Length: 351
Image 1 (cartoon, helix red, strand yellow):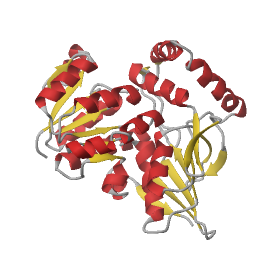
Image 2: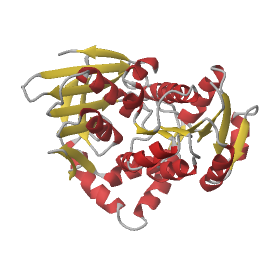
Image 3: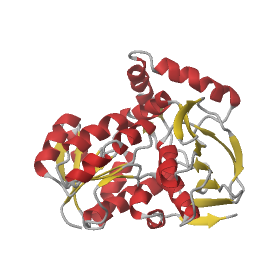
């Protein structure tokens, strides 16, 4: 790897572990964020760049690192600001899963290609896992007629406050609301719809439901199918809670409510750490073709946040080696579904 790799949000859970892995691999890492004291405390022997997001972006434009990793949400806000600061030829990767963030980055595709910049969004469990098993099933097949992808993350909970970045991402996802692809168009639907009860290959029974997300956008772009549903086990499983999601989203769209909810949610503290609820995290894809043929497959990995760390560091490593090409991409669309295997997953095709 050549050149510096900057990590924005380096003291967060993903950023912290990404820095550790990259340094173990011999990368020249720079940590960036608002709190210099905390950065120095966590990384006493690593160069720091501190300041507001705007101030960090000014430094980014001036110093031109080889790769910029962004782990700070809400990505619909931070990603465009960081990308616009990236100079020609820069390489950017984030762990976004907000539908609005993907739409914004996708809209920068032509500009990125013209300026030699490579933009990779969604280098985390939900997007990479579901996109990879879908592409694995599709291979060189004709365009399918219907696709459904389901993300079943198993996440260990750390003790401490949720934090502003994660809280902002959660609130923005609710504000985006429900979405599906119907007749080749992304349309608004009731959040928490299309609920389905699944049994994983391990025998765990989970319920997934739809919500507008980067997973949905990635599956649509990867398959080109006119009908796509993106679902997650993180959407509330109870019928009453699912029914309340549209109301919650409507309230959050009122002036000032999203910012208020983000501040309150960020202060919520978990006093004790909790182990992951299931041994494995799963991504499932179900594909139907116009002929009536159906294929279903699963991707298995361990703890979902650990996979996210592996995913973002693997993508950053490949970008630092000069692999990839200019434009806006999701990880598996740029590097193929095998990038998920390199991050610690395995494929299981059941049908």
